[in-house]
Amino acid sequence: MATSTFATTVSRLMLAGFAAGVLAANGLTLNGFDLNEASIPPEQIVEGGPPRDGIPALLDPRFIKAEEAGYLKAKDRVLGVVVSGVARAYPVRILDWHEIVNDHIGRQRFAVTYCPLCGSGVVFASNVGESALIFGVSGLLYNSDMLLYDYNTESLWSQLLGEAVTGKLKGVELPKIPAYHTTWRAWRNLHPDTTVMSHDTGHSRDYDRTAYDGYDRSRELYFKVSHEAPAKYHPKEMVLGVEVDGHFKAYPFKELARHREALWSDVVNGKTLTVHWDRKARSAHVTDESGDPVPATTSYWFAWYAFHPGTEVFSAR
Image 1: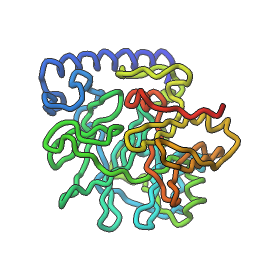
Image 2: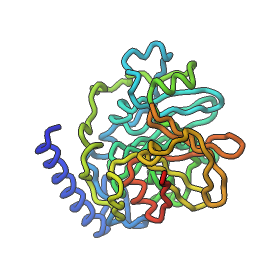
Image 3: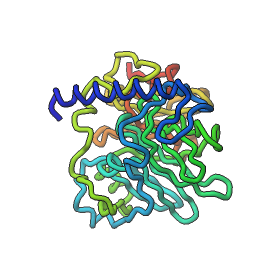
Image 4: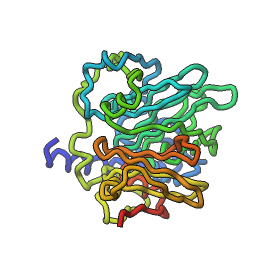
């Protein structure tokens, strides 16, 4: 995207966001969602551009064997999960266009969510009681991050808060499933038997290009956030964010790259964690004292800070 085009897009979206915020503050609905009883400031909920379901969530994804995925390059980014011993990969180049994939392995249903504006991939277990929630893209944002909604009750959910913020399920939190934001090559090396989501999605999209070209390099944000991140890091610096009993810590990839070790112990709010850093794949994850994966979030620095302004930040010193 040319610089002038990028700047024009930023200006247009920020104006749209301001107008949407005024509408929300006046108690009106946005994209058909009632925001009056929202648990987050309704005036900070804005329209992202596309209408409700204008970005189509995937409801019945198709998977293929790794060796059949000729459309993927070794350095392509994927979100990887392991559920009940089954490994699956979801290419970011597809998530860019759909943002949500509703999936299941056995009886475990889950939603793979990705917000291109925040670079954030989070996977939620979507079984609530006896119900299995199915999610769609609301077209609304909070702190520049996607608000998804469930088709079951039309409650809005904040991806980076991990809970419903409006509707019948307001206040309900969804359990996170550990997800790995890494390269296709690294994921295949770890899980050679993995399957991967096919680019045959039933939708006409050009998965060879991104709709957000240049965004990850620009310091500009499309939408305002409630807490501006310190300028010590580029706003789009990737960080691994961890929560331990309400205490938050961020591991900027810039700091991890300076650190000499690829594997080391750290203590977060009294809990010992092991940090794993893959320099070549530029990916990180954490495990607990038993070696089990701990749910963590890889996102842009500005996004993590917007939701967790009191975060502790790892420094390689």
